[in-house]
Image 1 (cartoon, rainbow, N blue to C red):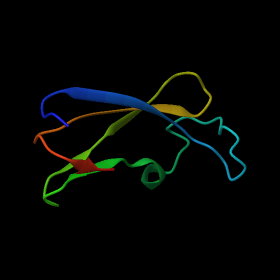
Image 2: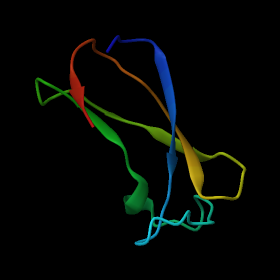
Image 3: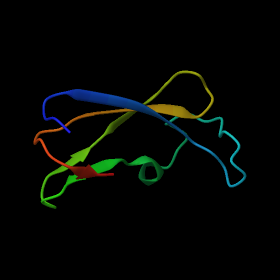
Length: 74
C-alpha cells in the first residue's frame, strides 16, 4: 500500500444471525469498531477514522492515510 494516498471503505455491522444492525456510530461501543493497520515492521500503526454513512442501516465509512509505504495487516 502506498503512503500519502487516502483510502476509504465501508463496513456493515451485523448481529449473530448476519442481519444488518440498524444503529449509528454513536450507539456503538467504541472498542467494537476500531480498525488498525499495522506495517510488517510491527512498529508503524495507523488507526482508521470511522463515520456513519447516514443510511441508518448500520454501515460505517472507514478512512485512513498511511504514513509509510509497505505491506500492512488489518
